[in-house]
Length: 302
Image 1 (cartoon, rainbow, N blue to C red):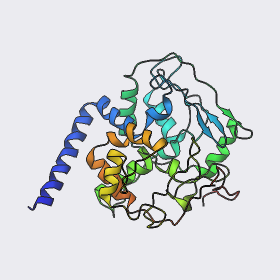
Image 2 (tube, one colour; image 1 turned 90 degrees about the horizontal axis):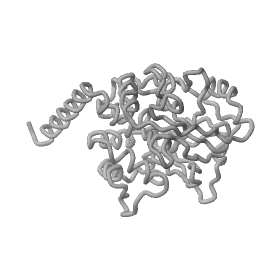
Image 3 (tube, rainbow, N blue to C red; image 1 turned 180 degrees about the vertical axis):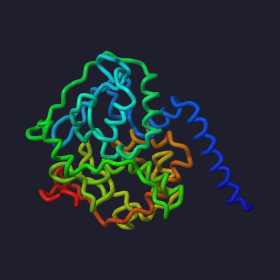
Image 4 (spheres, rainbow, N blue to C red; image 1 turned 30 degrees about the vertical axis):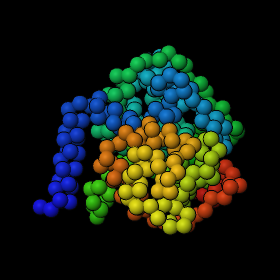
């Protein structure tokens, strides 16, 4: 067995050991899922997981809810099935549709094991009595019943299915990018009605909640990350430093600190490996790119 084969065997053993430990300790497993899914970023304003952080969008301002185990103001009265329904179907325990500012279109791919572990972790956190603040959205986006029509056309529920033609590492990276890490929620532009542009998967967006452009992370050599190696990507996910020596800015600094940097080295490598295999999209984002510049009235997926 050569050095590379021994290294791969060691990585496989470490991952198997972590999986075994996680299975024995669902709270610890849930903690890893919690950070991989980036939950803390949106659900924390000035009190951990108590919600209330303003998220600006072209549709108005969203205020993520309290997800502490408070029975009155949080999710303390939820069962595992309630969390599973919220993440996979975008539905509250009362049967209301959630707005897709909550990235359930990506979380729908989460495995049941990860969801149940996340539930165990959340139910072991400090409670908060902070009340949820209603969203402040422009009409017609303020009409929650209309979300059922959006879902009919713009939401594809379903657990992530590994591609048997791909390696285990590629499938792990795809699961992290498509489901847990929900990379597409920011890096894929949306049309006029908020439907992700499937033809521009990960090709960058004109505006994030802070008004900054979101870069193209497809392997296009001119407008994306095609000139980055897998090692470059792994180093970026670990440190935030780009191959040219500059560092990530804007909201990505928070994503790195609260999620990517907390991943195992194997998971960062898997994510980098997957991103290098997505179809390249040649798309240059201009400095005058606006929030609806990606939009088209005919943006429904086939």
